[in-house]
Image: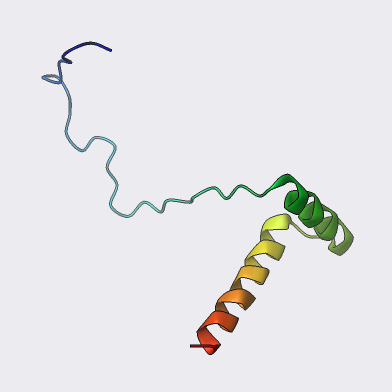
Length: 66
């Protein structure tokens, strides 16, 4: 790395978009990913749909226990 960088020609906020939605990746352990792939294939759907459904049910369960 350089000791100093020249930002004199930089443009502040060039890539800033306040309405942008950040989608975070979720990494599953290999055994979980394999299980989800097989389940999705059996149901004829996508893994993300099954995972989202499971997470929604889990959220509902946690909130109902409060």
